[in-house]
Image 1 (cartoon, rainbow, N blue to C red):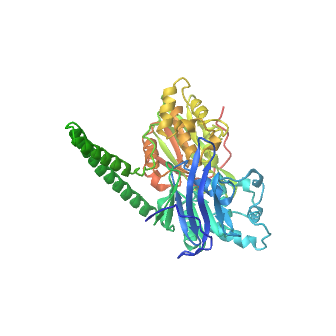
Image 2 (image 1 turned 60 degrees about the horizontal axis):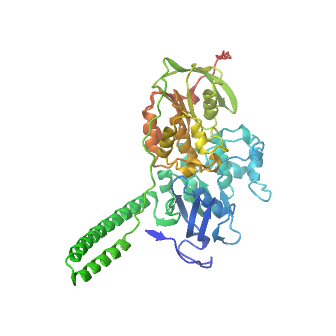
Image 3 (image 1 turned 90 degrees about the horizontal axis):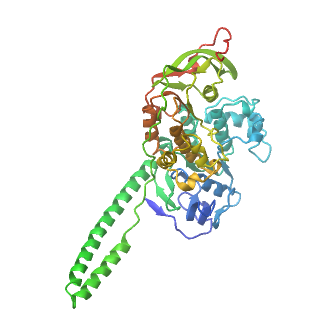
Length: 511
């Protein structure tokens, strides 16, 4: 059942079946600038022990709402009220520069104000939850991007807070990692709000949804899990459409009668006036039909100038085993229309390998001359945070084809306002859409994709999968989402964990 979140402010010791209200938004409005409103007079409450999903389109402001809860951001109007001494932990999206040289033990100790003397067993327990083996003396900088993401998630979980805020926690987790985390959250006795596009994960433990509407800038509250909410919204949309259709028929009927009586003259004109008034009243009764999140338009990543022959040759690659680099034999030849899937556990070096391949710096691998590479990094570091979206897209394609640039951007829901925004100010989901728009404009012969589903709205994923499935260039894909991979044509799978070490060092194939 949907709850309109317009309740007045109450004292925070009010009780319900879920316990006391521990956090309340009271008519909260927030905007980053005059032309970028995020929340408009939002009111809702969170109760002790509840497990909620925060849903909304990419860029709607979900992560902003988390920052308002933690106090990192302050409302422009209204107030956010928390019970005294409420402990809050949030899973951050990136390791801070000052944390890179910390050991695992020091990284987790830093999560607490006071020294924790039994920190080691706590670390062991929480790393098991995220399915990660991490020596406590190892430096944070020596972990892969996926492993660092797990450490960030674990740093929130280890605090055992009253209110746990999780922002896309399944990103970079494999199947076992998701299973471990799901069970932990099922057993968690305190309060959870989670942002995720993983329906199966959400349905396992959440019991309600806070929906942040990107169009109205308001929060709507629903009971039930993700599937329940989708059904409720669909029923609501259909009901609103039927009501408006009936009102439209009534309005047209009254207008037709008004015109008929008006032409009769005399007392009939009074009746015509009444008909017009009835039509106006019916017009006022029409409701704004709830608008679905838009999905991006179907798109193709063109190859551009076709490359004849071998695109990429891989004789050997470097991976990580037992925390040490090992060079292994890998005889791979990629040509046009051949799609390669790389698989292996977190920490084996997939992201590092993709980066070296994309930059043509991997010893034992060589990109053919003249090949244009399109590279999608999971951390979006290939995008300049100080550039506007417009400049980023402009530099990716034919700079003289303004119409192509605008049309491509619009297909990825990149509006004129977003075009003028700096990359660093975008949500992670919006950065993902910009990255895909950039690939379309690049027209690559070789496409290298590192976890392209991270942060992307679930509505967009079938469209993206279709584009990758139909891509006619050479492609290398890394993804921990089997449902996504199943929709894409894969010609060859390379399991990095099964590779055999080279018997002797290989000379670089680079000239």
